Length: 344
Image 1 (cartoon, rainbow, N blue to C red):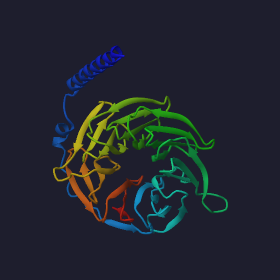
Image 2: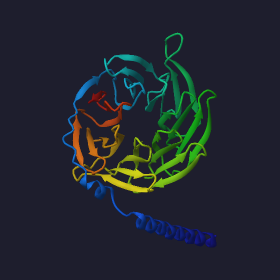
Image 3: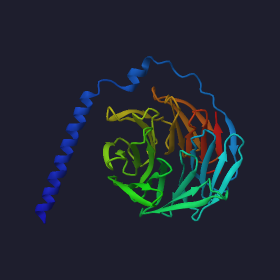
């Protein structure tokens, strides 16, 4: 028995030495920093965003929101047990869907606009058809295979969806058949967030093991792992060109990781910011990074320079979710104060 323990210890030591070698090789290739390259870029003059719409209707904390691809509608999930589909122009509610479990943690809008999905502490991903012949919203599928809470879900199409869970795995589902077709397992902590790349072939996940992992949907394999955060990663979001992604963590930092350079490019921190980040999103150009914080603020960062451009303060409780519309014209923030606000 002692022999095995010794061998495990020796293997650990060897793995650490190899990791250190990889790090040295990577550092040798890192010929410059994003800050240095962006030094001659002009500073962003003040970004003036105001609340243009307030979406009222939820009766409890909002936990998640997601824009539709039509640039106009969005879905939100609250622990009042309702999924609401909103028209962000008129602030009207298009659908208010009562959920079987009110402990909802995520919601998603299908690219076609035909379906929405949600999930949470019921370990299920529930998919609702918005375009039924009768006009009422019906549960189309309940996807059941995760052994932990559902933390995030994103549609690839009307037929496929990816889910992330507190059981440390992500899954790809065939919605029509109601079965999982692939399981992505490599994290050693609860997976909290996922983001699909623009080409829909890879996705990134962030977890409580403080790592972000990039997965190939075609093979089911983890192709890259990014370390650096010092605490749980709560949110990940692909950069608009699909070559990088942003992350937000309980360590009070947002970071930018590049897939091609295989390394962290930038940290977005401030001495005055001590609380965790719940959600992140990029402007359509990628120049701005929006981050929702537990201190009720949404901070706007200059992606290139790593500086804070402005803070958006309008909520009376933590900002739990945010998203930028597909045309880049609106930012929606959702909060535990039970309101959604659309900024522009």
